[in-house]
Length: 100
Image 1 (cartoon, rainbow, N blue to C red):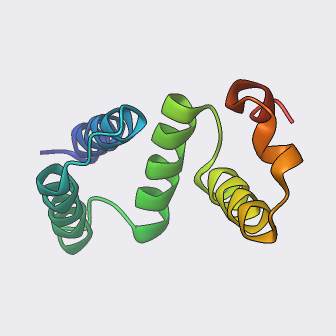
Image 2: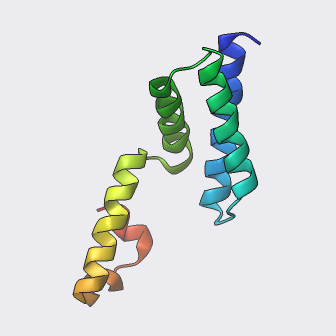
């Protein structure tokens, strides 16, 4: 397998993981298989850790429309608002909160 084919395969696996996550379907088997696949690619010199992280972020952005870091930040902010008891923010429909 050449590098390009490996990278495409990794990207497809990341897309599958994130598409299932978007549908709230956790697939640990696929996640662990992909982690092993990426690790094997690193060992064989087909991909670096930075390239793997970039691929993963690109797939995440394609599926969710935002980077992993951006999504994490929003989740942390939402958790803080919930813990503070700010019901005004929670009363805003999710589809509108996502535009903020």
